[in-house]
Length: 377
Image (cartoon, rainbow, N blue to C red):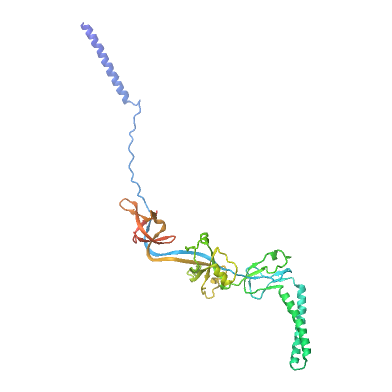
């Protein structure tokens, strides 16, 4: 019986030993590198964010002008047109070119008048001789040496010769176009230069001259489409009677050109003043009311083609707070700007009251003071 007990005890000991051995082995396997181990990941280092940076505008005082500027060209709205009064015949020569200056009395155009010229020359000779004879007869008649009947017969003969001469003279002179005025040739009818056999058409303009007379010279510039359809006044929709300040464009030699004035006139007034029949209604016409005196400096002479700068002042303010228009915002009818909140380094809204504005700047009536820095972007 003791032997059986000992045998049972031995079996229990072996079981305990095996369990202990298995536990040791499992513990060893858990500690060995047969299984991957987790990495020891460190938390990222905290970085201080960069402060937000802004661009600023410092509020200043200055003068503010509301209006508009632009450039127009001095244009003569009337040219002296030269045409033959009768038809027939062909042109022999056009004696001028575009842009040429001509004097009153210059021959502009001649027709082929070879046959008429001979007849006119013969009539001129006959008239000269007849006039000399009649003048001598008149002197003798006044002295009582010639009878009334003889004087009357010779008088009728002279009148016949004179009438024939004057008719031929008129016809001959109508074979030439003579400049009515001095000025610049601004138009030549190319139908007569490209077709040398073209018959002359009575009244058809062949040459036109710009006399440069001040009554026909206007500063001309285009209307906007809105201004053509709307008579209300805006900086680019000028009412008749609007006064513009004018000047030549600045140069190195004349950086501050002399200022002079002009006034916007209606097309009906232009027609009345000049007698011309049509004026382009898609343009503004500014009548130059005073021409500057440049002391004979031809380079600053105002003439057709001269570019002139115009300025229109609708309203102005002096010594007021001004800020750029693009720094001002609007919400529900209220205006505000952004300024920096130094506590949070963030921008904040500051409400302001506005006054006069132009395309670039606006007047600040209240809400800001000189030296304030507002955010521009």
